[in-house]
Length: 203
Image (cartoon, rainbow, N blue to C red; front, side, top):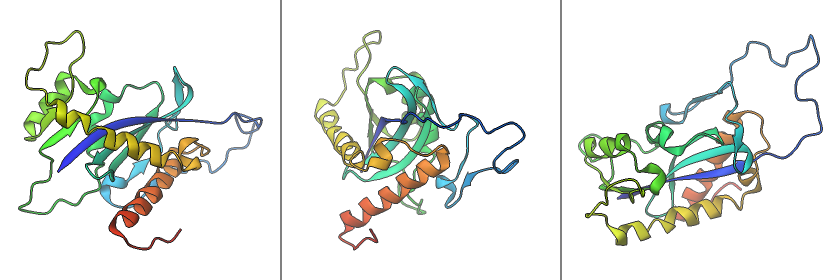
């Protein structure tokens, strides 16, 4: 089993409506928005709604974990300007695969681009018995044991991201709440999983 980490961006369309509610009015005051479900899928609405400015504009960065058949295993969202390396452990903790006693949980290898070439990530991989397939950055010593052949398989996650971006609601974020946006991702992940298993979906 191999796992692959990736990030994807979702832009938000411009709105001509008011940015904030009129004075004296607040929609659902004091109500916390939470995405419920299995522990790994639960998400509390962040104060910034996972929205922020990056080089690509105003939007959301989607962090994904994908296995070697192109099936997404975990997802997390952050503001567009946040670096993916800061949320590696967060998205790994959101992997939706059940942990069966007596069976290995973490993959033999985990690949990612240069954006994941940081000490804390490599330490995490070593601590969990997983070999990192991550190229080093220019300012780092060259990894003589880097597996180029395995890294070429990273196109699996790029193709998976391309498939999900065909879903208009995922490629462009229309939801204000991050929990709603992640919920649509989870629905798409389930549909994709059913297709892979050859089972009929409800779409």
